[in-house]
Length: 73
Image (cartoon, rainbow, N blue to C red):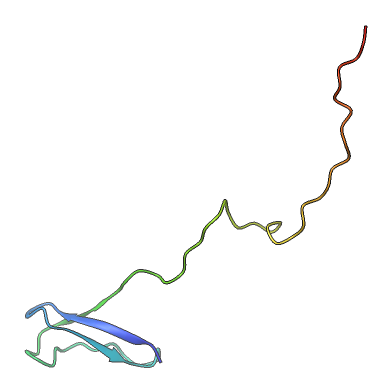
């Protein structure tokens, strides 16, 4: 089950709570009874590279050698 971080808007008390994703969010601070808000951190996924396309996981197609040499006059 995921762990959510909450912060109180009134007293700035911060705490973590293990909850199911189907549970309702907490609304009252256990310290002062003030309004709570969820604190969201950074995402734990990093995408690196030039991009993610349909062809990224496939072997590059080999092109036929081009005949780009200059012609003699």
